Length: 119
Image (tube, rainbow, N blue to C red; front, side, top):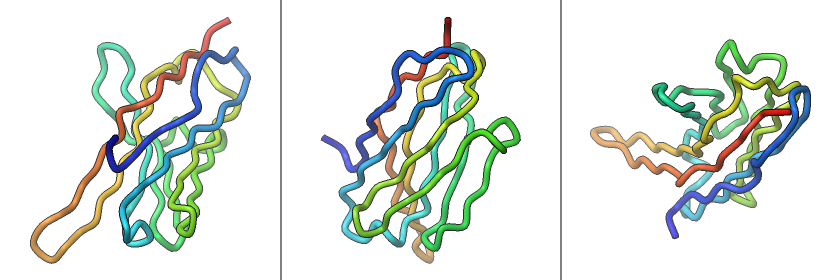
């Protein structure tokens, strides 16, 4: 098992909601920048939302107003609440963590969890 493990996802109807969770095992989780990426079939992986240690969040335009990213530095978890889902949100969603040293980075990816939006 890797440093990041995603859970949640599955099949959801258009307009529905789903919550993804990422559980991390890095000791200094609170120091990592965390993010959710997604990759749809035939497309490049894209950033969905990111969150810094202090909770400052940023979203892709496609996610603004519909998705909410959050983290719990004590539990070492990160969530993505996705509402008003559309078929174009169908993708594999990946948890990402990065810690920036002065001259290197420590970077981790989860294995991904499938979200399918379909009626």
